[in-house]
Amino acid sequence: MKVLSANQIRNVDNFTIKNEPIRSVDLMERAAKEFTRWFTTRFSPKYQIAIVCGTGNNGGDGLAIARILYEKNYKVEAYVIRKSGSASDDFKINEKRLGGLVDLIEIRSSDGVPEFSPYHIIIDGIFGSGLTREVEGLYADVIEAINYSDNIKVSIDIASGLFSDRHTCSGAIVRPEYTVSFQIPKQAFFMPENAEYVGEWHIVDIGLMAEAIDKESTSYFMLTNESVRGLLKERTKFSHKGTYGRALIMAGSYGKMGAAVLCAKAALRAGVGLLTMNIPACGYDIMQSTVPEAMVLPDEGDHYLTSYGDVAQYDALGIGPGLGKEQETVYSLMQAIQVFGRPLVIDADGLNIISEHREILEVLPPDTILTPHPKEFERLAGSWSNDFERLKKQVAFAKEHKVIVVLKGAHTSITFPTGEVYFNSSGNPGMASGGSGDVLTGMITSLLAQKYLPENAAKVGVYLHGVAGDLAAEVTGQTGMIASDLIDFIPDAYQNIR
Image (cartoon, rainbow, N blue to C red):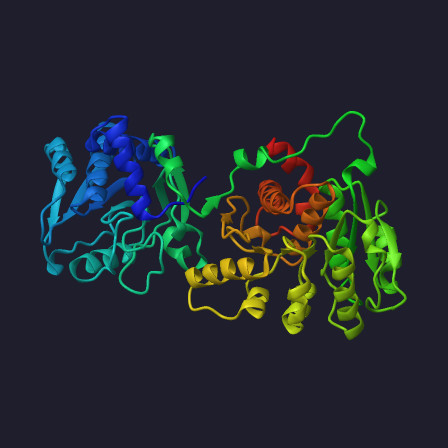
């Protein structure tokens, strides 16, 4: 699914209006109906609703929604902020269509800003995705009143005051519990800094022409079940364990063998044919007893790795979980990368070693997959002032070093040397638990061993990891979820995607 800018979304709207063909006000009606369809499946007519509108097209959406909800026996009142300037043509048409069915209350000054607390739900239709400057004055006063009220808030398309494709520096912004967006997700939805201005967001299909969306060029995409399903490999009747690859994972140190165990179990559940764990001697009994399906290559060092195995014989190499940063380990990592000479997966202490020994970046094979969390990425690429700047750094880093960067978090972002960015749509906050990243490393290493192209191993691994987390949350809930739960649900995640 493409993630487009506000200007591109406007182009898609105009193309659809011209070529479907459909009048803009009728496209607005279609959008209002889809919003209402989403709304009525979640909220019953017992709730008292206020819809707060500007006089542009987002406000026109709001008035259309007010009329449709009234026709469905909802208790609705509409507010219109009239400050200056003329209303859009489609707003005027929907204002006329409302025809007194719903109380239409005008807000013309700060003194007239109402108390919204008596309403159960506020629907925000003040500004849409075309906003170009921070909100101030009367509009800001209304938004602050909305935010101050203790009720459920739902934004139409995007929260009023939030820029869709750049950092919002200041100004008033609605803080909704839900955002219902029309067909195309906004880049702002994927940025951690905007969490309180997006809430739980949903996409509704309003029938924009696929041809119009295809015509718009972008570097930003969202991973979906449909797109990942098309990347999955099927197993054949006469295949054997060798068919699904041989993986070596260098992991673990004294006190951190749990990371290696989680990584190993995840790699096996993700489908690798043969797995070997290169670990320090202190972890030998732990690994043999907890993961009997894995072979173990114990190191001469007791507490940490001091050498590396015959990496050239393996189809995939993963490095990092629980590894530690001892000098012998650093040397082993550098040598293993150079001898392997193909794309590999590096996580955790493997990344921390690279940040302290930047010469390693020069010998990384193209399309190597790095899986940092934000702090690890900051050590690699430097600090940033906002999440849009961070994303630019991530893209630049992937391009400069010809690597794939999987920046973990809500809506994990994957950047490629081509400059393309993929945001994940699976997963939940229950996955914010120690060991979840070790599970992801094992999964991606496993997929590489199964001959997935590195870019596809990253996409499938990230999405599959999130689906496993979503399925686990249905059973355990989010609060009590641990990394081992993700591993248990990897097989179900495959089935779910298929």
